[in-house]
Image (cartoon, helix red, strand yellow):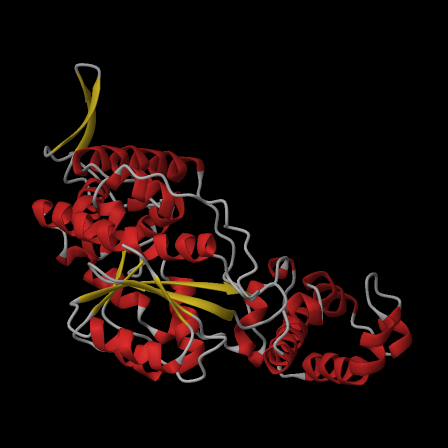
Length: 392
């Protein structure tokens, strides 16, 4: 398949007319965001069974014909590790396409491993080795060479073929429908929306603060987020996490005190010092009932850790039986949430419940027994007499 390079409105309209009857579209993007808050879209690759194109959004002002296809609910959009591509579409259009099929997620249920990369997926499924020599390309530069265009197009040409093979394998296992909840989540706007007043949670080291200091951090992080969005610059270019923490911890009350913070630039104090001091003073005076808080630390006891270890053994048994990786079913954190009765625990929902959550829950309830039979670990249906729930 020879890909087209499309950089005019007329070419785009013609290509979209030609693929309008395709039931699925393989989609990928090339973008840069090292120097911006929002990703800078540089190329959109699209493929069907017999056509492929690299579309230049830097040259085409109106992408409406393509967007109509991508947002058509009757057409499946196939992506690999879809979240970044979907975030870009959400930032551009304010909404998300559906339905989507993420081959990285699907590969998990096909027994190909968790978080598998695109090149590894194509090699495992199709026996094709992907050329990664252009992975560091600056996709803003024009003109693109024939080799760069071919490299970009291969990401969707092979993606479409991988999708067909993955669906075939999943249909054989009766697992296609199991993915519906995971894919629906990918099209939930909530996971792509950054609320400024919640951005303190992403500050590395926030867990070391509490009370008024944590409230100050919340105000500063919200201001930084708003500034980053407004100026389309990375958060760290506005203020680094370390400076947010130092301001929250030390509560400077003058520009002179701000200037003494390690790493604080003079121009930052000149431009934003007054505002930063206002935020610090205001947050320190907020009523206590409005302050944010972190959940109290409640580490597992030695006995509970032993139970968690046993649960991990059950997860591994279930994973081997289902021919999926244990990591795709549950992490140790997931097991702790299961032990504490968290209804949002992923093991209590969807295919993870079917493959492992049900068995793990029954063992916790004493309805099943983990034992060694002939030197092999096994999960028996025999109930454990006198079983009790652990105190969480």
